[in-house]
Amino acid sequence: MLFALLTGATQGSNNDDNKLLVILVDGFRWDYFQQFSDGELPGFEKLQQVGVKAKYLQPVFPSYSFVNFYSLMTGLYPGVNGMVHNYMWDEKHDSEFIVGDNRPEQDQAFWWDDGEPLWITAKKQNKRSSIWYWNGCEVTIRGYAPDFCAAYQDTPNPDKTVFETALTEAVRQLHENKTDLAAVYWEKVDWWGHAEGPSGSNVTQRIREMDQMLVDLLESLSDKENINVVMFSDHGMSQRVETDALINTLDVISESDIHKAYGSKSGPVLYIWPVEGKLTEMYDALNGLPHMTTYKKEDLPDRFHLKEHYRVAPLVLVADEGYGILRVGGAVAFFSNPGLDDHDYEGWHGYDNNLEVMRGIFFAYGPDFKSNLQVDGFINVEVYNVMCQVMGVTPAPNNGSLANVCEMFRGGCNASDSANSATPRLRAAQISAIIILFVVTAFLRLV
Image (cartoon, rainbow, N blue to C red; front, side):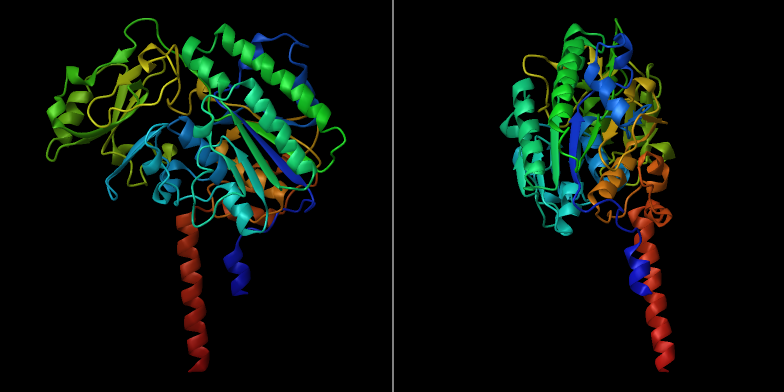
């Protein structure tokens, strides 16, 4: 009885021989398809006909890449898994996390150990994984690592050929039973979305390239009946406003009053740690700036699921859509597209995740999924349970609920799986209570 209570969610009910291919297309906005006429994207159209398409996939907040990479793979909100920004300071370890820059520090396990990504869940249950260019796969998390990792840093800005090669190798490994999970990341849609804005001609071209790769992929899978495919994006993209897009906080506060500040050189979300005694004064001053909202950490909206983690700063500045906040203080290093300063970005993301322009895409195809089905949009912490279900592995405690996405599965899913919707902290408390009850009951029986 105790064991049954402790295990919580049950394993997925799919065929244990089925494999999973995961494709992450960075920055693919949910409504990019609207610019194309019927027949212009045969790959995406075919994928919808033979599989499942969500109306949209909502990112978590802040709608940055690393934040959503980890929520997608762990099923946890940032306030739980600790990946609270692309740029972070960890006060406990006096360490900083700067996207694409400080590799040794970034690979420290403490940044990642608050979550359990899918490849670790799989590894714990004797499933093999091969990961290409997915940030975090090179890190030993909770004592585990994937069987194969092609680190993003080894192949920055992978082009179409690099992605195609990885995708071909992923399918080969799955088909030849050399792995159970293969995950591949491609960033070029996001890259050009930043450079030209969401309406840029190169964004359109990258979508056409992605479509042709889907045509080839679906053809290659036509005789491989045990491979499921889940494809999604991490966020959408917003067009920056034409004039006065950059907000300078130094118009109203002094840099000497800032202890730490983390964010990109200019971007939608900035974290500030004021020097001692300056928080209220700084908050009041920043509240007067237009085109952004300043939150005290404790006042962050509950729907952000962010304020629970200690890495979130005392002050969180969130720009309105199309605006960016200039970074002041803190780390100088920043990650940007080669040859393109992020001051010059035409497209930005990171904004309030309720904005439609921040929405991404979700598709699923294979023996475990229904065909020609469109489902309502959903938050991306649900994706982890979807992937665990088709892999036949028991999910780690997470913030999603399989019951919310059950309709996409050909064979349905067990109602008991929805028990996994409790947060890890809540489930930990429940488990502790059960153990105490068990011990007390056993003691009373002995007495």
